[in-house]
Amino acid sequence: MASIPLSTGQSPAAPDAPFDPAAMPNARKYLIFAVMAFGQFMALIDIQIVAASLNEVQAGLSAGPDEISWVQTAYLMAELVMIPFSAFLAQALSTRWLFAASAGLFTIASILCGMAWSIESMILFRAVQGFVGGAMIPTVFATGYMLFQGKQRAMIPAILGMVSVLAPTLGPTVGGWITDALGWRWVFFINVLPGAIVTLMILALVRVDKPNLPMLRRIDWVHLASMAVFLAGLEYVLEEGPKHDWFSEPEIAIGAWVSFVAFGLFLERSFRSDGPIVKLSPFRVPTFAFACLFNLVIGFGLYASTYLIPIYLGRVQGYNASEIGTTVFVAGLAQLMGVPIAAALSQRVDQRIVITFGLTLFAVGLWMFSFMTPEWGFAALFWPQVVRSFAIMLCIVPSVGLALGNFEGPELRYASGLFNLMRNLGGAIGIALVNTWLGDNMRLHLLRLSEALGRSADAANEAAAGLAQSIGRYVSDPALAQQMAEGTLGRIIGREALTLAFDDVFRLMSYLFLAALVMVPFCKPPPIGGPAPTEAH
Picture 1 (cartoon, rainbow, N blue to C red):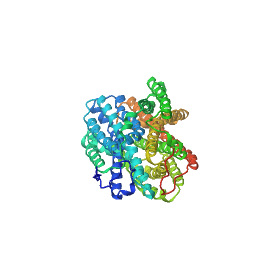
Picture 2: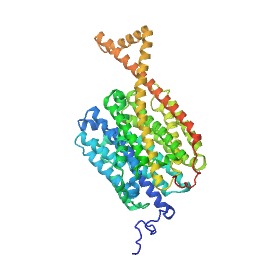
Picture 3: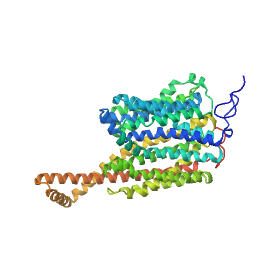
Picture 4: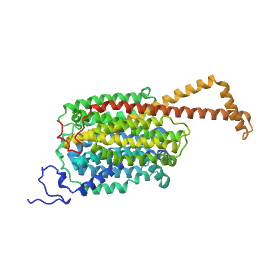
């Protein structure tokens, strides 16, 4: 039978012929990449958009404070499972059908979340949304490296790195605005139109590989189940541990043990299964292993610092969502400025030099945050935010190049899934640890301040008396005025202790980034602007 030209405008090819990126016009490649990057942005920003509206969702669904946290936890647990699984599905279904299904089902799940009638239905729909949306994140990395060769590849980590950091930065601002203007349900409905457009454009444009449907009959279900239990259990422990004093809570201890056992089974099936869901073979390349460790640290710093600043502004400064969004918006602008510089440097300079400079500058930015006082607002936070946000692009761009530049074909897909998994794991570990550090250091500083006040009892009593005298001008009862003065003094002490705890946490994070520099000499980057070598075996 005669060959039928594809509607994509590409030349007909033999059924088993490999995809040739050189045969596709550049304009088409850029359009495909842009559409897929926007799909990734949708999946990433949805976490932070919803985070800004949790109080309204809680009120609208009559949920308890312990229940509402599962709106986020369910999404993150499910997304974490899909990210490494997507490499297998991309080979079985093809990039076109996997990404289109991911975007389409993400859109449907968004509609269901917006129509949720109870907290239980919301948690279920959020888990579905996180699971189906998670496939878009690593798939766009692998497809970008498949589409572009040579110097064009330098733009992939720059653009996708920008998407990865802009999404959590802009999410709270966008989420707060949508909730105030339209109501919390529109936080989900806002995904419908762009999700539908992405789905249709992917179906119309993407022809980069062919499906291998027989792979679906060879799924190792034990491997898949063990991976799901391991990653979902780990995310549960990291999310809920800081809230319940970690392993003192039986549920947390059981979750950790089940996750650990599942991890052992996952490793066993990874090495012995005839058809593993996730191949760990990319870790045989030492540079990839170190790049994953870099990404773990980068995810830690990115998500933890993005999480801490709004918490500081809300709890110490008393800012509302709009004021917080205005203050952190400068971080997004600094990230945009870093994109072209990071891309240009990655084409001309050894990637190890770029990431060394990036890690060092990020550590400097975190160190600048460690001098915060309770009076810090937009002006005082401006330069620390600019330095940290600019530096993150100098970390992400070379780390992506180091990780994915050594692979081609199916191995590239598995490498992309594992690499992106590390960033999300780093973020989950980072938020869990900084919450623990924040609580522990705040209690420590409260004790120290209390001891200092005890040694200077006269000064403390004098301060309380002065406050009581000021309050007494408006309150006729002296006992009530004294009680209010003591309460005010207690809040001042608590505010100071919390600020000192934030300083300690940022200082610890800066040490972590400096420690990561030890790994740089062990990385062997691929040639600058050159094609990737053949895949590792």
